[in-house]
Amino acid sequence: MKELKEYYKRADKYSSAVSLLYWDMQTYMPKDAGHYRAEVISEIGTYFFKIMVDDILGRLLETAQPQNEIEEKIVSVGKREYYKYKKVPPDLFQEIMITSTMLEQKWEVAKPNGDFGEVMSLLEKLIELTRRYADILGYEDERYNALLDLYEPGMKAKEIEQIFSNVKIFTLKVLEKVESLPKFEDPFDREISVDKQKEFNNWLLHYLKYDFNKGRLDVSTHPFTNPIGLNDVRITTRYIVNDIRNSIYSTIHEFGHALYALSIPTEFYGLPIGSSASYGFDESQSRFWENIVGRSLAFWEGIYGKFVEVIPEMKEYTVEELWRAVNRVQRSYIRTEADEVTYNLHIIIRFEIERALINGELSVKDIPDRWNELFKKYVGLEVPNNTLGCMQDPHWYGGNFGYFPTYALGNLYAAQIYEKLKETIDFDNTVRNGDFEIIKEFLREKIHSKGKMYEPAELIKLITGEPLSHEPFVKYIKEKYSKVYGLEI
Image (cartoon, rainbow, N blue to C red; front, side, top):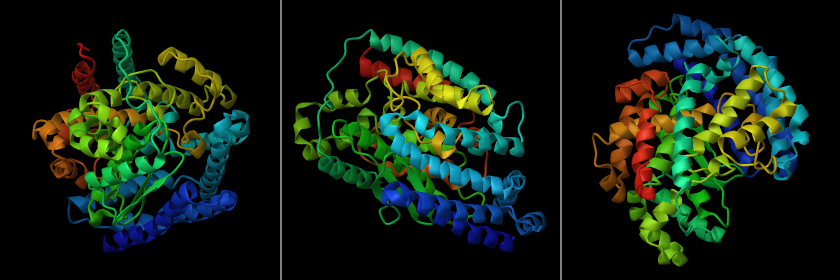
């Protein structure tokens, strides 16, 4: 057992190196270094992959004698991962890595002009490789399930389809009600300098007690969190001069991810159980802090004084006016800027498209048309260009098929966790007073301390006593937005 743990911890150092190289590529790497960086990431990443499917690891997993529940989980999760990836040829893994890294760099250049033709041929290659990868991994019912299982273990596409159907019906009803009301003034419809935004975001992370001894805040095209290694979890945000909400909520969102990574027990680090339960659970933590905490009236009551100190032109608005403005519901093009009511519609569109792509029911060349068709159908807007459409996210161009559904699942997990949390604390007073340690302790005990010991379906039941359901999310939205808009939702 000791030898098995040492093997994992040695191997994880290569994963840490890849993470650092990727973080640098997205933040500070010179533009012309991209092709070589793709080769380096691919080389080290493939070496790490080979270590993780080596026969030596297989023998250690089969001969280890666990002495407690934690060690039993190390072995069981380790075996699940080992035998899954053991089937994948390292050459295929390396080809996917280098293709996706190069495509993501190409996407970043092509995105501002919405030039889908520039990325199409490489995306076709990546999807073909990904289909082969899914076939080798194996699946029940449909090929897409093989990829979905990489991000949300145990979840099936048909189960997600049913959940999303309920969420979609509810969301469109809320939209119809809200849009029948007069529009209120938007205090944030103004330019605020990047310097002021940086000052406030830096203060905000200190207010939330993000540990700058174990992380840092930088800028990237698409905000992300990257756990580099032990006690090193870095986050990024982006600054848009005419929308400070974007940086505020990107920062809080990524803080939620970082908190999860930094709160997993140190002794789990580098082991099969040393990460979040799933991408959906990871997203539940970022969406919990971004929306349930960060978009609450209690939170704005706590930060209002500092906000108007840094941005004095906002003093003309009350805290209630600012709170309503950060909770405005409206149809919009960009997923990361969508309000928490319409956000799930953006995910449902992506889920339907990538599912069809991987299952061979949609061609790459038809992505823009299918995107525009579904966007009109669900969100009700005509898409003017690919920059605001199918090229706005890096996920497909980085090879992350099966990832998107976890964002909406994260919203559902978060609402269900929030419902349980409210049984134990006075949530509004706790948030208003900035007593975040009380909330963090609940999350640590129920979620973070478990690492990846349990699959998400099992973990949500351990936390709340109930299986995953869309109903707590519906209840949360109804209660909150009835107050925001002054009508019964």
